[in-house]
Image 1 (tube, rainbow, N blue to C red):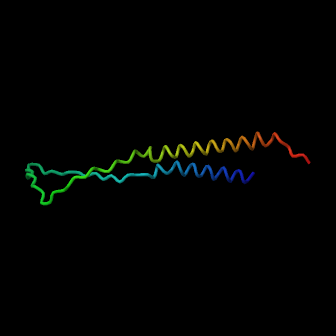
Image 2 (tube, rainbow, N blue to C red):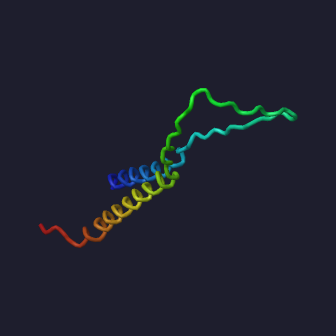
Length: 101
């Protein structure tokens, strides 16, 4: 009986840890603010000394739900299915058969 409790606690800990992963995911976004002085005129932009070739931007990553929530949900669903099968075997199938001595 203790072994089953230990397994249940380990599964529960893994599920809670996988749920907590998205909470710690963060993106480093910094806000840039412009300050202007009242009455100051803005100078005309000058031509750059070196021309820069614009490259295509890298494809943006999906939202955090695509990266964390969906795989976590799949793992939790798999753990629930596995736990249900084990529980069914332990409570139903195991009690059907008796050892004959």
